[in-house]
Image (cartoon, rainbow, N blue to C red; front, side):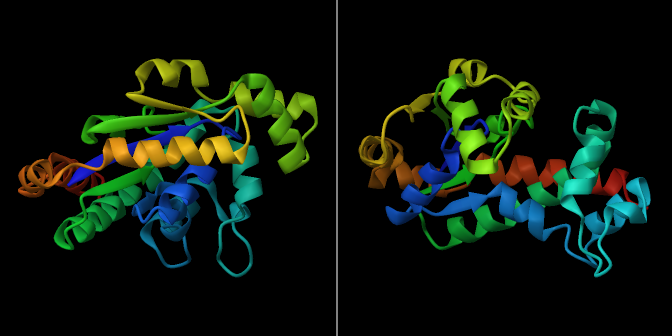
Length: 228
């Protein structure tokens, strides 16, 4: 089974590409969705966040107050690292579980939709990396239109991320989302053709994708060392 890492920048169109891939019957493992699920009330990551950041970042029903937590960690690298240490191991563990499921069911290709693919070093565990790109001007325009940000806020959010130009340099495949949806759909169909392995290659890769072994071992070791 071939593992493909999909990433991009804020308002670059990664989520749209992910949706279009699903329409082409390509299974998607969504790191953002997993990150939301693993901080639900009662989950271990939820308890760790409460331990490090206090009750003030939680709503009365026990769910995370994301805007408030975001205000605390935005622009504070040390606190952001603490938050990541509470969540990333559990995100990785759930991703491994989902990869294993798709492997067992015989899929030829699975896409890992990970906003911080390179920053989290998960690109080491995939066979192909794909970056969804558009210019910074377009990113700013889309953020202001979609999220209601003023230009200053949108620029701050953009500067807090790794520049898309740097991700493009690291990517195996680049999807240019500077045009309209019809052009994006064409590129996604071409992408599916590129990343889907033939029967012989699929059989070889099915025998044991390295992601499963490497990521599972890393996550298990991390959780063991940081148990409390």
